[in-house]
Length: 177
Image 1 (cartoon, rainbow, N blue to C red):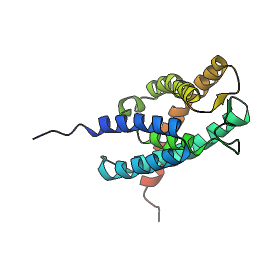
Image 2: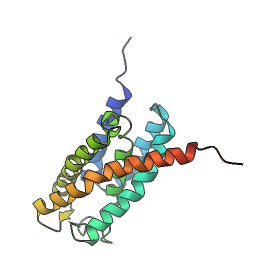
Image 3: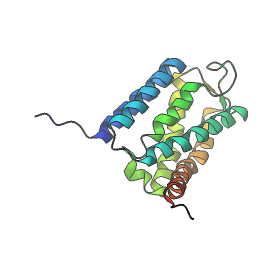
């Protein structure tokens, strides 16, 4: 009998494929992949309500984050978005990331200082790669953009964690009579 790989490994591989689909193929393929990723995640993952909370926190966080970077000129979405707003494929990456935090990244995510370190390095690296592979551009010199991203991402993932934990507490609190 063949043994299936653990879910966290499948999730990690699918999220990496998703990153490339979103960055290289754009909005429509990115949205389709993300939809399928979410459906399959909630069908096969050892899921708990934290995964839904993770998405609900990451989506607005990502939209605000990316559009503020565009507004303040750190990123230029002009070539990938007619409106100048962050493209849909970039928002899809936030959904995919949200579903990796409690599975392949669980050990890091449980420790705020480790997830801060991962954010400070991994977040800017993902944007650096995304800018190089997509039509988005830095609105500032790349080193300056990378440092700005480091400053933001070192607290962004711990903030996400804290908000998800607060949401769990609210959702699990028994109603008072």
